[in-house]
Amino acid sequence: MLYYDASMAAIALIGVPATAILSRALVKRMRRYNAEMRRIDGEMMAFQDEAFSNLQIIKSFGITDLFNSRMREMQDKYRDTYLAYNCA
Figure 1 (tube, one colour):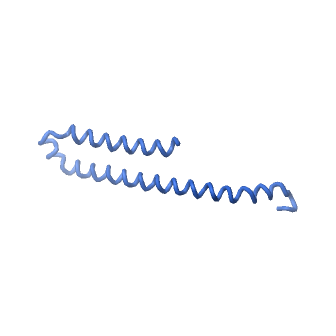
Figure 2 (cartoon, one colour):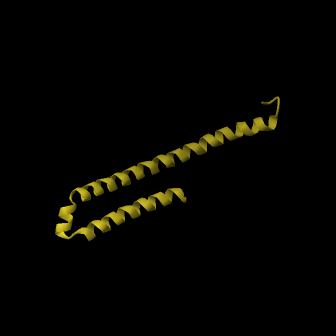
Figure 3 (tube, rainbow, N blue to C red):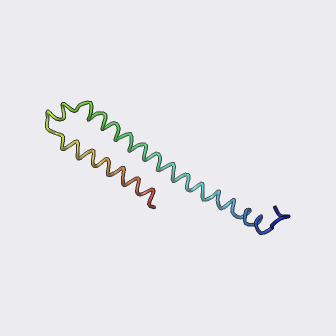
């Protein structure tokens, strides 16, 4: 590479360490985000599973509004976490 273009070789030698450092930071951030999204997704799935399996009981006690508000809170948390990562 030095034979053909020394300036490109210098750019490559400078660029590789910078790319490695930046990618490490980004990978750590992505892993934290993925863990948080998996946790929130698991909470939502567990809540939905419980709500759908006990739908008759929820309706009979008249607590559908409570379950609706809890589900909306979970969806808001999911959306906020998603937007915080993708818009930052």
